[in-house]
Length: 108
Image (cartoon, rainbow, N blue to C red; front, side):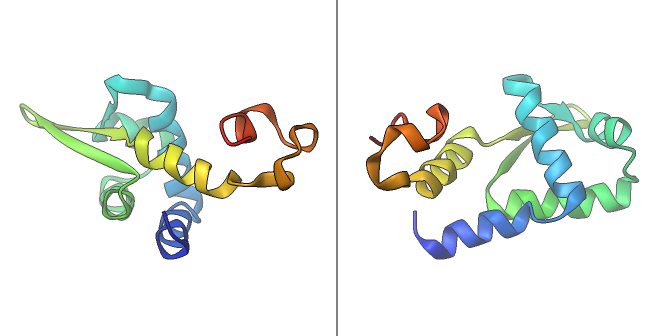
């Protein structure tokens, strides 16, 4: 990953609704959520939700799959983990004591 990619990913969630959508999808796990369920859970109107889902999809943080008449959305864990790894790469100059366990354990 490079700075430009990281900035694109971070900017896609630098908005309250998109951040909430992404967190909800991360919590939903591999089963994902239908667009309508996302809107209901977060009280986001369909037209607004569609815009935010498009932005997150374009950044690569979420993926979509059509199932019958529903569109299900899923967090892209590979991209999310890549961003986290990039952000914590070489954190604390390799000193485990100052890093949260999850942030640096795979990089030290």
